[in-house]
Image (cartoon, rainbow, N blue to C red; front, side, top):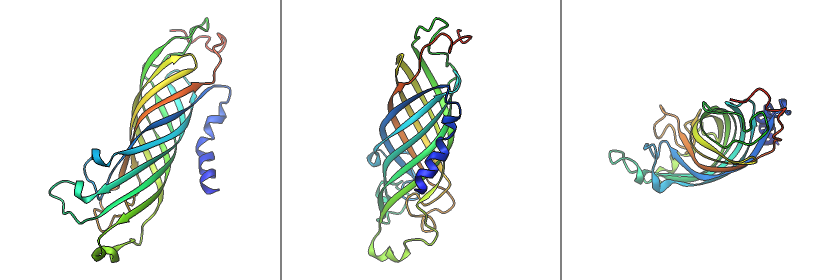
Length: 231
């Protein structure tokens, strides 16, 4: 119930302007992690799948508001870290569940239709950021000689995140669009991998979602709606 309440609170702004046009879609891609067991920005062999869904409010031609729920698999292993880092035999696998609301800025964005209501295709790059809440389920494996060090006293499995994303959106049809997106998540925690004080407590963990999406546009291409938005 608590997670549902958080999701409703984050998505509430999407209903405030219900008269505006909304679309919904599905995301499919990959997830990766950077933290105490993998200090490289990306380790290809630790890349795992991710998927989710979203709702996007077309607030203005250049500004959209999106609410999403993404789920991804992550992992890390000392053996894949930089060569100057001691291989302690520590590794983990787990999942992240992200609930977030973000604002998208489309610098080249324009109305999907002219004053006559005729659909216009467009390619729109964008940047986005916002606020999210992430729930984790991590399975940390360490040698028996280190087992007494875990779990750490301040370990947490949910925390606030800030996504930083950029992507490209292509309107293929008046009701269908596709997008490609790359987005890092800054976490307000060093326990994404269940390791902090026994690793590097001075740097928080990050995770990444990258992939593509397909969405359906629930709008009417009425000339009245697009009045005054012709470029």
